[in-house]
Amino acid sequence: MLLDSIKSPEDVKKLNYEDLEILSEEIRKEIIHVTSENGGHVGPNLGVVELTIALHRIFDTPKDNIQFDVSHQSYVHKLLTGRNGKAFRTLRQGDGVCGFSNRKESPHDSFGAGHAGTCLSASLGMAVARDLNGGDEHVVAVCGDAAFTCGHTMEALNNIASSTKRLIVILNDNEWSISKNVGALSKSFNELITNPIYNKIHTDVESLLAKIPGGESLIKMGSKAKKEAKDFLVPSCLFEHYDLRFVGPIDGHNLKELEYYLEFAKQSDEPILLHVITQKGKGYDIARKFPEKFHGASPYDVSTGKSKGTKESRPKYQDVFGKYLTKFAQENEKIVAITAAMASGTGLNHFEEKLPKRFFDVGIAEGHAVIFAAGLATKGIKPVCAIYSTFLQRAIDSINHDVCLQNLPIVFCMDRSGLSPNDGPTHHGLFDISYLRSIPNTIIMQAKDEDELVDMLFTALDTNSPTFIRIPRGNATGKTIKDEPIKLEIGKAQEIKKGTDVVIWALGNMVSEALAVAKELEEAQKISVGVVNARFAKPIDKDLLIKHSSEAKLIVTLEDHVQTGGFGSSVAEILQHENHATPVEIVGWPDKFIPHGDSVSSLRALNGLSVEQISEKVLKRLQNKGQNIRSKVLV
Image (tube, rainbow, N blue to C red; front, top):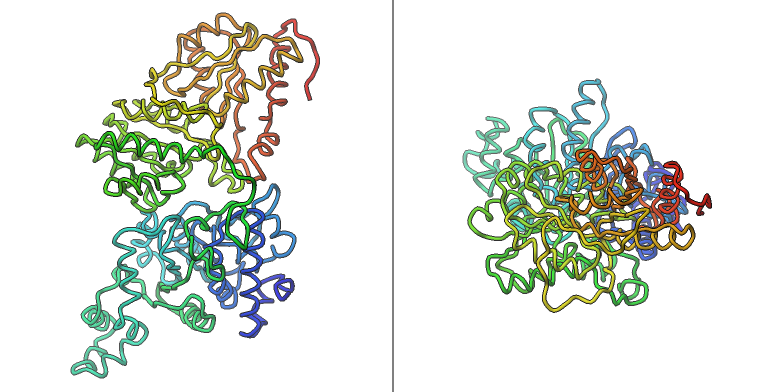
C-alpha cells in the first residue's frame, strides 16, 4: 500500500497527482476499516481527505500551524504526520491514538480540541503571537460551517482584521454538524454556493469591471470601489464585511484546485477565507446516506453499516428520556424541547418527529440555547433543554445569570453525565455537579434506573425551579417502567438497605456499584453495610444523612463525578456544619482529566473505582479508625 510509505508530510509532497488519488482512496479504506473496529467519526474524516492532503503539500507542519475546529476530523492529519500503521489501529483505545487533536501526542497537533467553535480564536491568538515574536510561519484555521453558528467563532471573526494581516481560514462546508445545520448562516452559505454570478467573479473582479461602462475608473479607485461594485453585482458576503478576503466556493475533492487556492492564500497579504465544499462521508455510500449516524459511530459492519454486537434489549437512557418527554408534551402543550445540534444524541429526535413545531435546534450555540429557554420560561412555556454535560459547561454564566438568578422553571437534561470513554477528557461529563451546586436555586438529580428517570422527568416538569437531570451514556438497566410516573419529593433520598457499620450514599448509576460493594464487604468481611439511593445531589436529604451519621461508623459517598466539589463534598459539608464527626470516605473520579479508554469499566479500574477497589478503600478507612474489623485485604 502507498499509505504504508507515508511517514511524514514530506513523503506526501513527493507524490504525483496519480499517486495522490491512490493515496486518497487508501486513506478512506483505512479510516473505514479502523472505525468499523473501534468506532469513531467516520463521515467528517472521509470528507476532508483531499483537503488535508493539500494542506500538508502546501504548508510545512509543525513549523506552520494547522488547527482543526472540534478536531474530530483530524484522522487524515494523523495518518500523514507519523501516526500511520499500528499506531492508527489503536485509535480511541486505551493508551492509543486520541480521536481528537492532542498537543501531547504530536508536535503536528498545534492545538488540542474537542468542542466546536474554538479554532478561530486559538488560531488568531497564534497568528498574533507569531507577529509579536517576529516569526514567518503560516497559521491555518480549518473550521466547519457549523462552527460559525457558535458565538466564539463570530467573536473571533470580529477581531481578525484589527489584530493581524496574515491568517488563513478554511470554511469546510458540508452542511452538517452532528445534526443537519440550521439557521440563517447555513442558508447564506448555500446561497453563495448556488449563485452563478458570484462563482464567476469571486477571483477576478477587475476583468468583469473592465467589460462594463465606467469599470476602468472603478479599478483605478482601488480595492474599496471594487468591493462596493462587487457588492452591487452580487449579494454581499458576510466575511468581507469583517474585512476577510473571501474566495470560493472551491471543490474540496479536487486536489489541483485546492492546491492552487491554498498557494494563493499562502501568498496573501491580508486575512483570507477559502470556502471549500466537501461531502461528508465521501467514498462510503452508507455514511453518505446516513450522515447523522456516521458522524460519530460505534463499531459497525462495513458492508451493511449496522452496529456490531448482539442486539441489545435494554433501551438507551437518551431514548427513554426522549420518548417520555414526547409523551408528557403530548399531554401538555406548554412543553417545548431545545437542543444544540444534537437531536438524536439526546433522544430529542423522538420529540422532533412527533411535535416538530415545538422542537428547536439552535445549532452549536449552547449559551443561546439556555437564554432562549429563559425567555420562553418568562412567558409560561415549559422549556426542556437537552445538552451533553460536557457542552453545557459552555453556558455556565447563562445558567447563573439568566436562569437561576431569576429562578426560572427550566428542565435541563444533561446527557453523557459521567464517562464518554472512547472520546476522552473533552467529552467526559464529570464536572456538572461541582459547577451547578454552588449556584442558588438549582435542583440536581440522577436516577438509578430508567423507571426512576421517568419519575424524575415527571417531577422536574412540575417543579418551579431550575432543575438538572444527569443522564449517563449508554444502555439503561432493563428495569420495567411503570404505567404511571410518580412525583418525587424534592431532596428526599431512598434507603434501599440498612446497615450499622457503614452506610453508602450513592448517586444515580453508582447505586448498583454500591450494592455490589455492600455484598462484597458483608460476605468477605462480615461488615454490615447500608445503601442509600441519594437521588438528589442538591438538595441532599439532610435528616436521613444525620440519622445515619449518628448510627454508623463510616459514611461513604459514591458518584460518577470528580471528587472535588461534587456530591461527596456536599455530604461532608453538611456533616461538618451540623458538627457530626463521623468520617466520610468520598469515592469518585480523581482530580485530574481522565484520558480516553476502551470502556467505562477499564477506566474505572485504572482510577480506583472498581467494586474491589472501592471495597478495599472502605475496609482501610474502617481499619484506620480502629474498628474491630478483620484485616483481610481484598484484591
